[in-house]
Structures are given as C-alpha cells and as structure tokens.
Image (cartoon, rainbow, N blue to C red; front, side):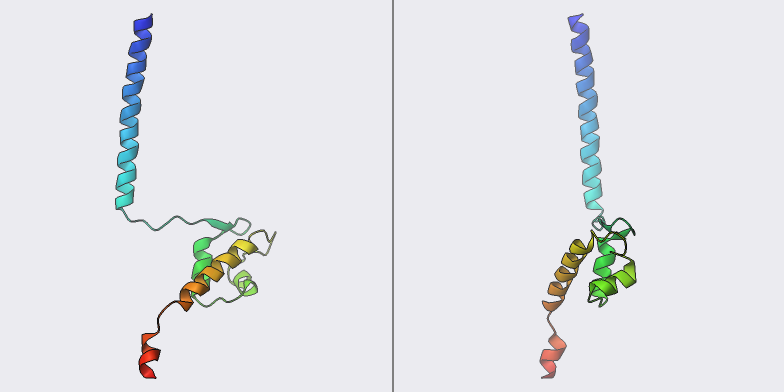
Length: 107
C-alpha cells in the first residue's frame, strides 16, 4: 500500500513539473510578444478603462467634467473620480516634460 502511494506521488510530481514547465514556457513566449499592458477599469459603472482616460487626457481633455462628457466616467456613483484625476495629473506632468525643440530654435 505504501509503495502504491509513493508511485502515485511520483506520478503527480512528474505531472506537476511538466505543468509548471508549460506555464513557464507560456509566460516566456507571452513576454516575447511585447503586448501592450493590460487595461484596468477605472469606472466600472460605465466601463471606462485607464487607457481611455489616458487617451482623453493626451487629446487635450483638461477637467473631470470634460472627461465625464467624453467617456461617461463618474456620471453614476463617482467612486472613480479620484483615480481618474490622478491619471490625468500624471499625463499632464508627462506632457510638461516634453521638450519643445522647435520653439527653442525659433527664439
């Protein structure tokens, strides 16, 4: 009886190790694909993702009311407003750091 259990454990260990190798292989292959990062839902009520908030901010959306008009974010419960504002502030800071070589050459 004890030998049967040991054989079963060895069989399970062999299956688990091949399963783990398969997972590792899939992870490595997915990392090589260079996929864009996954989107996170900021507003579950209206299905607005952080990508949509970033795109709106990069397109010139400057306030939360304007973001609400463009995406519907914050129109229902409003619990997403703080995260959306943080994302918009992050995008604004990134845009301020962009060099403007054309303007500096024009002066």
